[in-house]
Image (cartoon, rainbow, N blue to C red; front, side, top):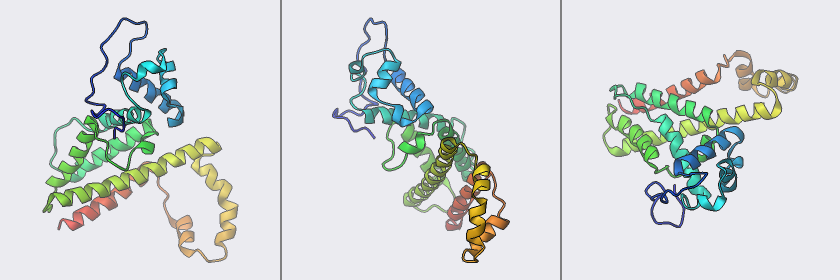
Length: 239
């Protein structure tokens, strides 16, 4: 959430009046440039100086549009939420609606890996972050068996905890693959001799069963199955 010195949230704060210049600025242009940097090289590549350079503007000009880098990150996160919240009509099927929202969240996180580095903790209170929160809460508040808004709130927290954890794990694996140059299968092949030696002593029978018998589905299927466990748990509490 916004952490600048201005008491007005960054989403409400007026932009400076336009003036003739070779490099016109706007809050949208600044955020778009920051997202391009983060998509290419991660959040470490995002600074007010680098964003200003990408826009061919002086860094001090950016401070007319935002007060701190934290505000810039808040604005970037809100843009990601704008990509997640569906515009379609309500279906009445709470599981289908949550599954669609989860799928859109995963797609946004895969497009913008920095999303998992920013999401979590206090909720984003930008307009699109609030729209996301409203969507999740309203779906669960309409689910059968809900007796109090607390039920929707706790269920929404559980769904969000799963999404954040699953997506951080998936993005971490993707980053590790890029850094090591090994795909997941190549890493498994490289690690196989060590694992065979460790598992041969019989001290890890359940791990052995996983290695030997588990189906090891792809990441998309793993994400969907994990979500099923969460939704099944919510449904069970509603009966």
